Amino acid sequence: MIGLCVGALMLAAPLCRAQTAAAPAAPAMTLTKMDEAKQKDWRARWEKNLAGESRDRVCDRVMGEDIAWLMTPVMNGYYYGYMATQDTKYVDQLVDWTDSLIKRAVKEPDGFLGWPSKGAAGTEVDNLNSYDADSMLSDAMVFRPIVLMAGEMMKNPALKEKYGARGESYLKFTEQLYAKWIERGGWRETADGGMISMELPGGLDPTRQKWIDFDTRNAPGHGFSHPDNKANEVALWMLAMLDVTGKPEYKEHAEKWFKVQKSRMKPLGNGTYEIWNYWQPAGPWDHKADGSTKHWVGVHPNGGYYGADASGIVAAYEHGLVFTHADIDRLIATAKTSWAGGDQASPTAGMEISFAPAIGTAKEINVCFPNAKTSKPLSAGAGAAGGTVVSSEWNRQAKKGSVVVHRAGVQNNVTIGTDQNTKVQVLRMWTSLAPYDVEIQKDFEATANPGGWGGLGGAPYYLMLQAKLGGK
Image (cartoon, rainbow, N blue to C red; front, side, top):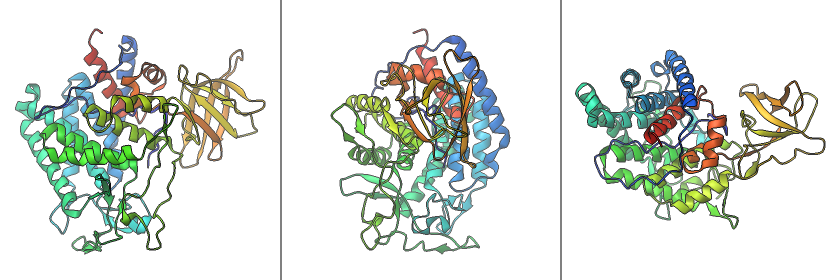
């Protein structure tokens, strides 16, 4: 639902763990110390941003898949805010929001709790959005930071006395959510020994006392596999559960999905990956009776989905699962190559830009980060102008935007319009790779907005990593 732009603060964040079982040593990072003044600026802008979003209290009202997209970024902010600052006010805020969410849970006919809503499947395939149903994606995304904080509450001496019992209750509650999806058939084995999370047909009747189509949810041909980005979010939940409990079943679920993810990524001779399909069938349930697929198969134009995939891949690597250092190097090379069809919201401050002048709306813009593999953007055609992006805006409802550009030697900035028909070419600077590549780190620090939506959880995570560097 939310397309994260190239410059968004979206980072893989599994390194800070509350563990009960030994984990593999974290791979070495190339991360270097951030400028101290910039750290202070980031923290101030992030804190202001988080305070503003906290006042909206979506925790008191969102249901279904909206929980994933509207509540999770704030919850990530609380968890990583504490990990970055050790300020317990963020623990208290996470507790407040978690308790608000849990008390609104609906008891469903099979005895499990959830937050059902129409449209919770996030897809019209098989009319899945018509059901008044739970969202596995929301359970996974919002309870990941809750589980990680619960681990801190139970194990961190600074928190255990005051918060330990609450942490135990949160973990127990989350394990019941996992049991719910196991009981309902929320994961299915794939032919290659992998596993994928599912959207299942079935929901509640208007009284919310009885099921509709629930008993046949796992019949042949029923169900729909998650696209990669959602499957990666579910796997990140499993890694959090593994980190806190050490239970092998969580590792198995994550590892089997990452096997599927890797199988979909084709290495190319130039050291990159061919960009994989946003969705593809994982089993016979993803085909219609006539043999056609239930969803189109191909590369998605929204680069934010691939940022989510990269986060999952990096997390798997950091846990010693499936992906190797060589895979990360290849992913970094892929990130630094241009691709056509970028999101119109992709240009961010600091990018170099080439744009084809037009009356009203630019028909083509090509942008890239400085110091990337492609040091300058490809020309946008005959008569193209160039410069550096100062700022950009995109109205997703109106599907129109604008990019403010500074042109060398020109006194006044120029504003160019964009719309859904504007052809965009950008670099895939997946920010989860920032700790593993000096150029991506440099571009990330130059362009990321800690006061933006992606900065809610991404900024404190990055500041946490910086704090761990100490005086390095």
